[in-house]
Image (cartoon, rainbow, N blue to C red; front, side, top):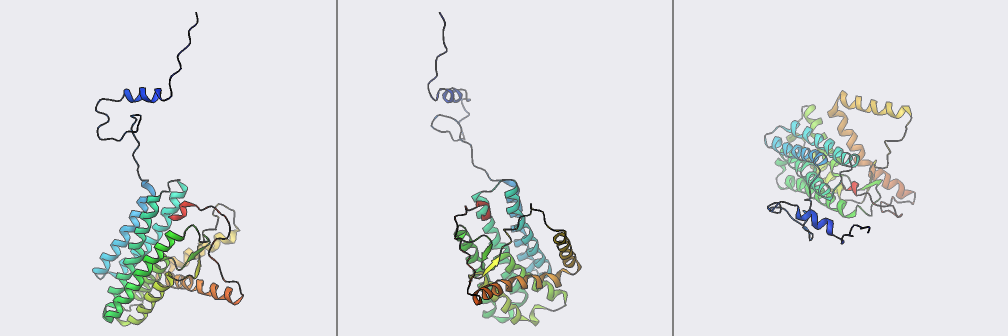
Amino acid sequence: MATFPRRRKPGAAQAAKAQKLPRFGKLGRKVDASGLPVRRRGIYLLPNAFTTAALFCGFYAIVMAMNQKFEHAAWAIFIAMILDGLDGRIARLTNTQSEFGAQYDSLSDMVSFGAAPALVIYEWSLRGLGKLGWIAAFVYCAGAALRLARFNTNIEVVDKRFFQGLPSPAAAAMVAGFILMMTDLRFSGTEMPWISWGIALFAGLTMVTNVPFYSFKDVNFRKSVPFIAVFLIALGLALIALDPPKVLLPLFVLYGLSGYAVFFWRLAKGKPVSIIQTDDEPVDQSERR
């Protein structure tokens, strides 16, 4: 008489695997209801390593400012800006986006583009103004914190083509670029405290405005482009390499003014720029980086 294998009850395979675990294998590890070990949560190393490097650059800038090495501090802020632009793109390319990475990136940005530029420009130029000096530095630092908090909360409703207010890396680049240019021209910070005061206030307040700044996030780097586009990129890099202190500051000042120019131009046309999404485009969680 033919025999047929018995049909196992649901969950029998899992129970059998659980019985094969060593007697002391469950110590120090979590198990689920069926006795199987629960996989622990981890973090992705590659993108968070870039974020950590950006955080280190911000901390290094603060230390250099305390040691009166302001040129080193300014360059550290620019390096942090490059690393901050890379971590999110690497996370998207390697499919390693995470909520931890998004929050860690914001905390790193607060140090590198909020606290560090405020302390650097205060030590370089604003200390002699007394209360007005540290108030301007605090306005910049608070503006960066508010800008980052608003970015994290409004990411699902803001048009990804624009930033709501001046991005904190661009604001930090304005401050660091000004210090680099004046140091290159042999000017000390004590000779122009009011210009530094105005730049710190302008950058801090512009970060919390509703003025839209183009984000370049809709640029598709995988599409073919005309040859002239590659030539212009090479020309821009050559100009920056020719004299970085004299090129970087005008570049970021123009970007800092571009949002106001677009806003008032559209306002005069009767078509104010709206940065609130009007369509049902799904939100890319990788943009949180």
